[in-house]
Structure formats: structure tokens, C-alpha cells
Image (cartoon, rainbow, N blue to C red; front, top):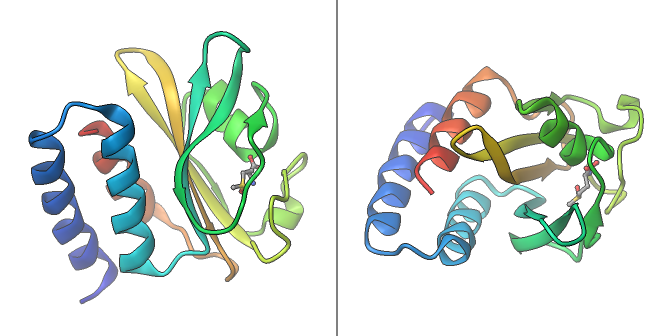
Length: 148
Ligand code: SME
């Protein structure tokens, strides 16, 4: 299967899974697991906007231990939150302010999760290869987070 076929299949599977469950954290956990294992990414997970601290806080993920809290506008995750837009980073070492949770990560994509106009979380995916993510990943990951 090529990348688009994999995303199409995953999208249908995730849509079916979330149709039977209305708990956001459970749905995030399964979506992270499915994406991670289908594509073999280095790290796949969510950071949720914590209203109390005003920071992103680590949510369901697959992969190595990660930093727990990220500020608005900080790192790739905080930048996607601030911009309310997906951020694709072909080489994390060239992204000013990149937060290196793992030295093995070389490229990254962060996709905001919206409730209405508000960003409530971000989906963060890291790859050990450079330039892993492109417009196809952006399009399908945005579709996937929209159904959560
Ligand atoms: N690299 C991210 C931090 C989170 S870890 O990659 C899991 C960032 O710059 O926001």
C-alpha cells in the first residue's frame, strides 16, 4: 500500500472506532496507536491544552518518554497552537526553538485539533528520517483529527 492508501484505510478505521466512543482521550489513544504502528513513526501522540496552566500538557502517545508541558508559541507544538495551523518541519535542527524531546528525531509534523474555532490539542508526529512529512500527511492527518 502506498501512503495515500494507508491513510485512507486508517481514516475509515479511526472513524469507525470513534463512532462507538465519545471519550476524547480514549479516541486520541487509539488514533495515536494506529498511526504509530501503521507508519512506524518514532513518536506519535497528542498534547492537550490545559486551561489551568495555560500550557500544552502531554496526552496519549506511542514512543519514548516526552516532555510534559509546552508553552504557547514554544517549539513546533506551541507554534502550531499559536498559528492555528499545521506545521511541517523537514529538518527539526533548522526550526528555531524546536524542543528536542529525543535526539533521534529529525523531522516532525504538528496538526492542531479544533473544537469550533478553538485549538484544544495538537497531534505531534516525529520521524527519525529527514523530510518525512508532506502535503499528503498534512491533508490526511487534518482529516483524521477532525473526526476525533
Ligand atoms: N518537538 C516538539 C516537542 C514534543 S516532542 O517532539 C514529543 C516541539 O518542538 O514542540
